[in-house]
Image 1 (tube, one colour):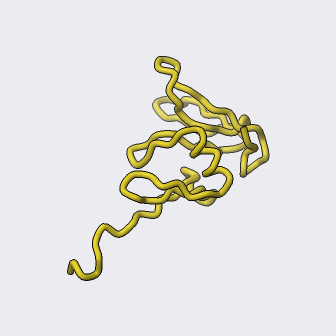
Image 2: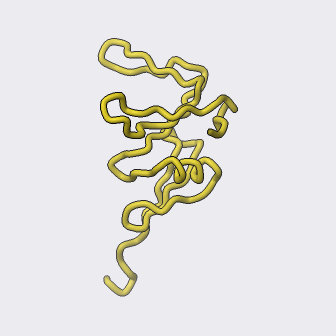
Length: 103
C-alpha cells in the first residue's frame, strides 16, 4: 500500500481476527499499549484510520483514494476527506439537508 502521510513509514491494513473484516489502516510506526484501563499511543507515529465508524464505512479502494487526496462520498451524500491536523486524520463535510426555502 502507500506510505504514511505523516512520517513516510509503510502502511499496514489490519483486519479483525474473528471475522477477517477490515478494521483500520495504520503506520508501521504507530503503536498503542494498554496502560491500566486506557490505551495510550507510544509509537513514533500516531497515523491510523478506521475503515468503519458510526459515520462511514469504506473499502480498500476508497481508502487508497482518500490517502491520495480524493474526497469520498459517504452516507447521505456527506464527504469524507483526509485531514492530517485532526486526531482521527479524517474530516466529514456534512451536506445541508434543507434548502433555504424550507425556513
